[in-house]
Length: 489
Image 1 (tube, rainbow, N blue to C red):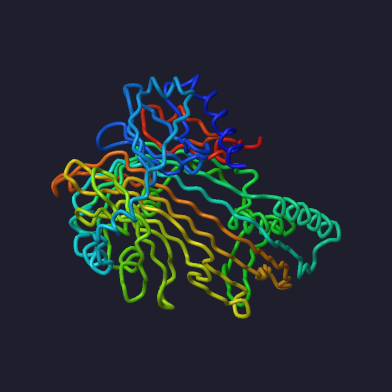
Image 2: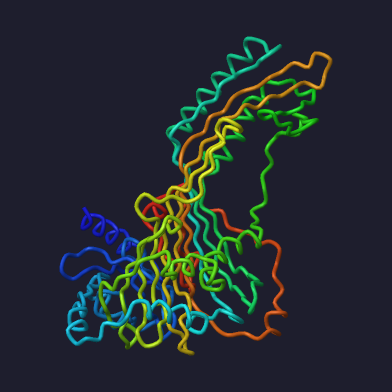
């Protein structure tokens, strides 16, 4: 099955590269042909891209003559662009030899508590982001899987039978559309993120695109809007209404004459874009109170050395961690450089049986929320100052959502007729955030102060993924579900 996926992906981009100035290739294991995800592809000493979950990467730079490919567990490979083409855009990596037994036999196995202590002690020095400018590319992928959806008319005083019949027909159609949908959206943007020695940041976006099927968007927010709009069409547009949801009054004088949807300008708020990428960096910049800081606490986590490897010209420890106490909830792996205790890579996920925040207000407010899954990865690369700066960050969250509430419209008239419906939404939101750092450099306080952050940026609406938009920019190669996503007319 894996080989089939790899072959399908390979066939797709081998056609694509014939018509583009960019170069795409797939990285696979030499022994079995399986794709290798998250392999670093350096186009010069300190910059590059990374292979995606399907082992595919793209370089948008016609001047690149060769690349260096590295991934833990495999031998580093330097290969020319010419040889990549000769190999039909398929790059094979050989597995590296396990070195752990050799280290144990020679009595060089270090003390784990000492390693963890030194990671914490040297973290700020090794991973300092103060006074830094990062050139970034970010991708957000979002979708909602509906498990249950219901929309029932509860009150329809003074509504003609014909209106009630039309209302029920519209409800049945919406229900059918929602249940069969899998609402997806993709947002890419590139830009420069400026960070001071505090928590202050500024973002100068370069370009942004949105790929979403607006007409068939059945996200939670859109479903609630569509549900309300169906009911509003049946009401008297000459009157105003009080709106209540459950026991809460939402609006005193809603006028139905102003409920027509307006086309919004294709604009992103820059603060919203920044709020998507900066939390990914907070594990590094605000170390103590984030996932990495909490995991590097031997009171709450157990650690074990699984292997050693060689990368960046030095030995690295491969350390697994698991929760020791109830408050600890993550499991994963640390890749730690032996010479300076810098983190090379950090992978984490909820440990078996663990969950995040849980809010159950079904009886009080008809709402339940559970953080069911969280997993991610942070990859670091050494810069020209021998500091380990973030290279690629991925964060995934799966949340269960249950909403069951009534919405009632009350006429602002002597009759005070009531019209209402009950809506039930149950399902899971899936959110994936990625960030690729394509370049980094130190900046002064004066430079930071001189940067003027815009409030908004226009984005480009896409009907399908269009790689030519990102010409001469290093980006994350999309997965097949994004490449094949087409907006329905």
